[in-house]
Each structure stands twice: as structure tokens, then as C-alpha cells.
Length: 146
Image (tube, rainbow, N blue to C red; front, side):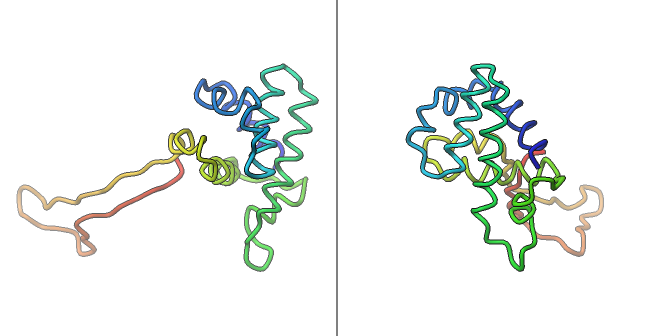
């Protein structure tokens, strides 16, 4: 799980939007949650080039994400985050990071950049007018961008 978090921190810390919101440590100091504070610490350590600082912040972030657990019967990504050696899909871990970012007012807009939202409108065939049997006129979606 730390490998997934390391990869996420490495990528997001290179983004000007995320650096602006988390990289100066201001959000970390006024963190609304442990997870957000550790995320800010990881960005700040990354900006300083401190591998040890990033590692320590990622360890704290992993534990903080696991503590947010509301998984049923000990299953799910948050439960897996509690075990330091778990190998988790980066998209699953990114979903948890996006949840943390979304919980902070200052970071909400940047978190939305990591989500895909929209509506799907199915049109009938132009030639024959046929629609699929499972036709629904307006399908909303809101998913983690991959």
C-alpha cells in the first residue's frame, strides 16, 4: 500500500494545482484530519527533496487512511491499508486520497480534477429508430478518473 501512496504522492506533488494547495505546508498546519495533515507533510517533504520525510509522511498517511475505516466486516481498501504489507491497486488508494481531499474545502476543487462527471444520453438509431432494451434517457455518472 505504501508503494501506491508513494506513486500517488510522486505524481500529485508535481502538479502545480496540488503543490499550491498542499505543498507549502499551510494546509497541513490547519489540517481538518490526520490524513490531510500527512498528505500535506508528504507534499512538503517532496518539495524539499527529503526521501525520509516523504517515507515518514506516507507511513502516517497510510495509517490515517486506515483509521477512517467504515468497511464492513473488515473488508475493503481501508482495512487493507491497516496492513503495511498489503499490495493495493493504485486506483483504490487514489479513491481514498480523493475522499480526503474532497473533505477539505480548500482542496475540493483540485479533488474534482481527479473525478469524471457527466450525463450519458442515448439516442435512437438514426436509420431505424431502435433503442436498446435497457434504454434510460439520462444516466448520470461520477467516477474516479483513471
